[in-house]
Length: 381
Image (tube, rainbow, N blue to C red; front, side, top):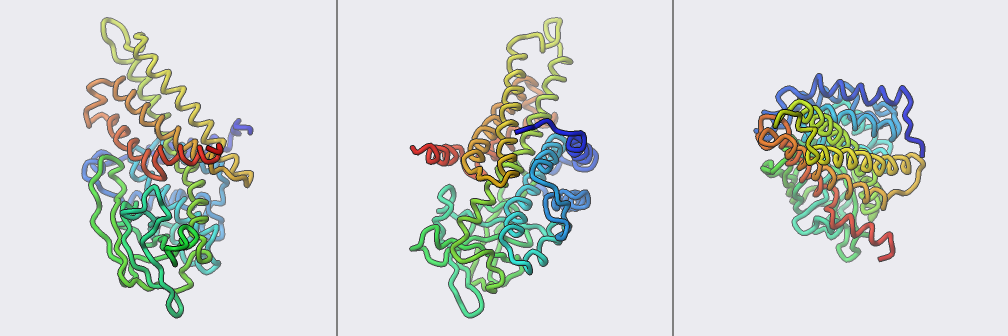
C-alpha cells in the first residue's frame, strides 16, 4: 500500500476544502439550531460534482476511483461546518447510488443515477425498523408477489433523509421464514401510493439532515423496480456498507483534522499564568492524543479504501475502521471541548456541535458493539 499522494490527488482534497469553506458554511449555526436541511446547498454540491463524483461519466458522474473519492470527502469534512449536510451527501452516495450502479438494471441506472448526481432528486436507504436495528435482516416489512410486481407493507424508522427523499432503496422480505435469504431490495419513489412519511425527529446532533419514519400500506411497486434478484437484499446491503464505512468515514477524518488545527491555534493564542496554554503539559498532551488518533484512524481508513480499489473484500477492515474512527472522533471532540474550556462548551464558538454530531456517528451504520461482533466472527470467536 502506497499512500504517498501525487500533486493531482492533493489538489482534489484542497479543491473540496476550498469549495466547502467558501460555499457551504453560511448559516451553518442557524441550520444546526433549527434542524434545517438546505436544498440550496445540496444543489451547490451537485453543481460542484460531489454527488456524482464516483459515478461513471455515462450517468452524469465524474468517474473518480475510491482513493480520489476518499480524499475529496476528507477535504469536504475538513471545510464544511454542517456535518448534517455531509451526512446527507454520504447517505445518498454510498447507500443509494453505489447500490443502483452496482446492482441495478440498465433501465434503473439511466432513470435514477443522472437525476441523483445532478441534485434533481434525493435518495435514501430504508432498512431499519422498530425491531430490526442492529439485527438488520429480521425484517417485518413484507413484499408480497402480485401479477407484475409486489405489494409492500410495514414500517421503517430512523431513516436518514426520509422526510425529504424522492427515492428509497427499501428492503423488505418476500418470506420471513427465509430469514436473511428472503430480504429483497426495491426502488420506491416517494410519490408511490401507499407510502406515508412521519415528521422529522428532533435529535442531539447532525441536525442539518432530517431523520424520520416511513409507513407502507398496500404500496404497489412494479417488478421492474426490484433492485437485484429476490433474496439478494442482504448481499446488496452488506456491499453498500463497505463503501459507506470507507468513503463516509473519510469526512470524519476531515472533521478530526479541522479540530486538531483549531485546538493548536487556540492553545498557542490563549494565555494563562503568563504563558500560552500550549506550554502546559496537560493541554499539549490532549492535543498530541488528538494527532495520534487522527493519523492511526486515517491509516485504517486508507487500508479499507485500498482494499476496495484492488477489488478485495474488506468487511472486517471496514468494521474495524468504523469502530475505531467513530470512537476516536468522540474522544477528540471531548478533548477539543476541554482545550477550549468555556468556549468549547458554549454553542457560539463552533466546538461543541462536533461532539454532538460525533455521538450520532457511533450509531449509524452499526453500533460499536455490532462492529466488535463482526470483527470477532472474522477472528473465529
